Length: 511
Image 1 (cartoon, helix red, strand yellow):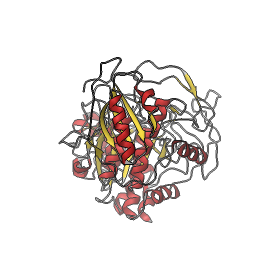
Image 2: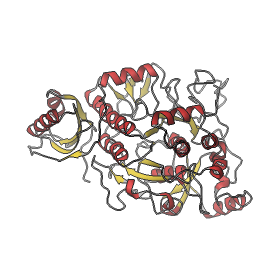
Image 3: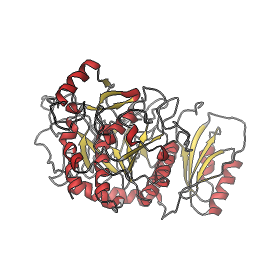
Image 4: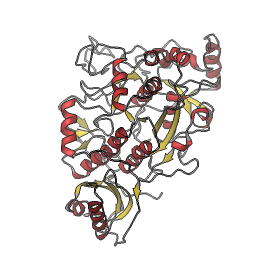
């Protein structure tokens, strides 16, 4: 399965964010990002049919001139997001990118993949562990002893770790708040998700164009369970069925951005998702993935630079329209504040090549984009999960993501991972920063419910201010071999493992 984030990226330190913003010339305020009519021109196929993002100035004359140049170069325009200056194009000409980058008004352009388009990455660690009927019976028996608990809540150590069980008794969240799960799709027929699902704010954005037809937002197969699990962590209803979410009273929607054949998350689909969320009144998005095919997109590569530019324009547009975006930090145990990181996984749609990147110049998208809340993962002991990526000045906040290796809870199943909803009415355990980000998104939804007038900037400040401070450990030698498995830098108020602290749902509804 792609690179789902039961993992994901880091938020940049302030100087890096500023330099990133300046280098890309991010756009001033835009009113809406309604698509412009498509156009196309056929040319002889000279190479594989690839998808491109072409990023331009936003005035109508420039966009029209660039569209004409695209057609003349043999490109097929799939969709134009005029208000952010992003055009999605298909071309079989290997020289298309270089040709379009030379066109006046084009600020960046490049292929979003290294493999051909097929007819038509999440961040969890390991395979799903489904809850069996026998195990469920044991959990239900234990849950019966907890007043007001959902049938499987005894296994949800993560809710208790951040006070979400107590918060639900004060304020479960407002139906006026929607969290969009940008992911592999959500099974809205699940009995724990159906009561809180918002179909009117859901779509399938695969390929860059939003499909809002009935059920288009659902996972393609039961194996595409990642988004359904994430949705349950955020807003599974307290309805006497199964599990509970961090914010069981808010709405949840689904924006499916995965390629139907490969399961990968390409830039054009993610651009579509952020714009769709913004234009449909979504208050919060959860992004537990990275944009394929590059784990890190380097600014000295024209294709990778174009990916960063396009997705950043879209997420900044969403932020301007009132949407707070959260993303998982990643599951590679990388230090995003270091000088060099080895990457042997990119591109993941063809043959990866080994390279060493500088995380101040090569970015995990969307987690390292300016304004995106980057979330690291913790286990039941409130320690950084062994797999979680980290970085002082990059991680904004921490949240339960699970740790089945070193942090096991005293629950009926004794499973250190996170229990949540799965397609077809099932339940299962997953772990990763993919699971941490939705916990933080749920707390953000509670904050939005408590402070309905708060804009994304204020919500982010509240999320950090009400987090439980957590200092760096004196030692992080989890396997006891005498070697530090990661080095935490910073102090109690801000450090590389926990950012500003571990989210607290109870505080979110008290103030």
